[in-house]
Length: 133
Length: 361
Image (cartoon, rainbow over all chains, first blue to last red; front, side):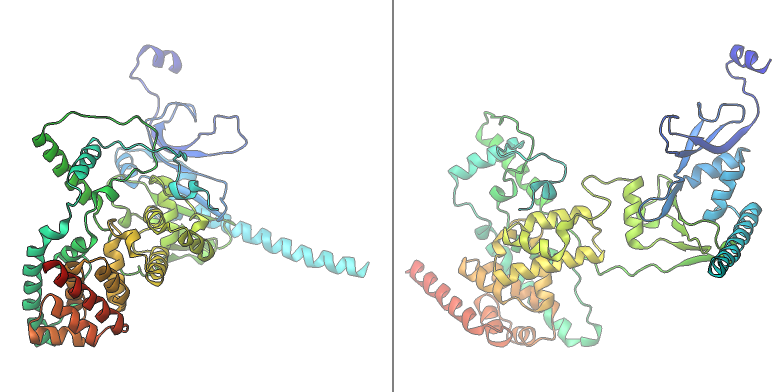
């Protein structure tokens, strides 16, 4: 069993190193806050990580900004050591211009635009219907 | 009434004050015994030599007007003059600032140790009096890194990306913003200041500027004669080349010049900036009269010398260089040619000559 052997051999770790988002809100507040972190793949999302590489605040502040920070020097190092970024991290770094744009961001943007157009198309129809009524 | 918490940041307001400078108490003892020690006598010889040196350089400037380079604030000669004019009033530099209350420390010293302590106090005072830089206003950043129309409508909020690598200076850090329209642009100076304060906080600086810096509140503060505290707070809050910093400093200097309260800044590190501003605006009359009334003749002479350096094509400079004048003659030339309140300056000069004649007689 993987867990037993990792308990017996202190240096064993399962899997590879990933760069991912770990929640830092201690599960009690209704306020998410993520850390961009280099950790082993098999570890729990919020438990011990190797190094913190940045932060991401998903709620916008009073200036309508979502603050993201990342330590580009260390990210380059871990990528050089063979770390894999997860999808959300890849999307964020694609927005930043550090990575090339993730293809899913384009698809999501298109989907959102389609939804918005549908909503606009539906709203005037409703207005017209109410006027008729 | 403005609560003092505005001015003194996070420190609590205490009426009783105590110093933490053992050297200050030593300097205080020294001052009680040598109550008339002033820098004026020491600097007389240096001043006359320096004024001669300055006038020797003036002809070379006026003889080749095409090669004239405007003296900057950070030139060593300009800094020398400004340091001298600022003066070194140890009592004022080390006056008690609002701090945690601690009982004073007394030390028993021999004369030699006392002199050493005074010397180190002087050096400390000179370091405290180091002038903050005067820089031209920074140009706004309008750099767009990429325009991605395909990303339009991806989110309702902007994303601000900061590079938190440790070793880069703050001016070179990458802070980029991805707008909801899809453009990736560099952050403007105000946004940069705010975000750098979030990730690399400086002590005493706040994320949003305190409302003291608005016009009406500034006037109230000036009414209470707190120009120096205002300038210190401005120093902490803003970058030296931001428009806010320049605006607050200009307002302070204008008010000081209008009221004639040059003494408030006299032995502080902001005096050089005040003199530089007035010299560049060519409104040195008030300061000149103030110096003459306080019998600071050498300071007045060096002030006119600085004026001649900065405006070498003015009448004063050209006449001074042609006549090779120094000392009182420089002041007379200035009073004749350049000053708007010539009457006042000449009166003050005459009064000074009378008093010096009486004292010699």
